[in-house]
Length: 294
Image (cartoon, rainbow, N blue to C red; front, side, top):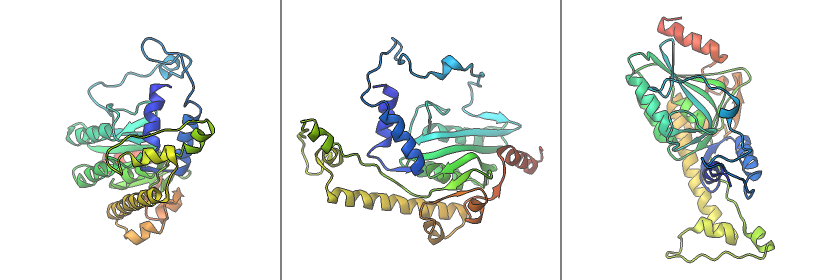
């Protein structure tokens, strides 16, 4: 199995996600096509026949000293694809954006004398809860140092919206969307498949609750585990609601009433989740005008 997809599968299953349900389905479908399928690898580790965009596109050179683009005095940070706690890169990589790279880029842009404002260029359905709210707090606590805008190129759902909500201003295009303030965990039960195959998995462990989720995934999920996971998801969902309420000046009750729904264009503004309906280029020009550079 391709190491990239093995890494992604660990990020998707059995872990809390602040991810739009449709994006979760896409991730699962992509993995389902690849899990268990043998591949031939080159000596450098790349799979033969796998899509390698470097082979098809000649990428423009990027400034090596920054992890963001500096456009007309504005630091533009890309927030794309699945959001994960750590990628070890400053730019989106292999369909993922790491909170670690975003944090480094954001803090660097705040101190960059050439950057007079910061833009989160958002196009993501969300991702991992782990690491998300720490970064949200970092962005929120920096309010007042420089203008920080969340500009949705298309959509900012769930974890991506959590980041957007921490910005001074959020814009969304007419056909884009914001919201999905909720948490989901996908627990995979392999027990029936193993039983049908005549296989049994035995765990030798110390501590009654050691590797509980893993054991039940292979031996049949029990109601007590689902109850515990629901309590964990409820706690993280409540944190999400309270964080968005703080960031957007809303009441927790108003945010909770959205029931993790998503809102397109003007509906997002009406719900208080965005400030204006603007195409990305229009929003960028509005920021430049506010800076006196438009």
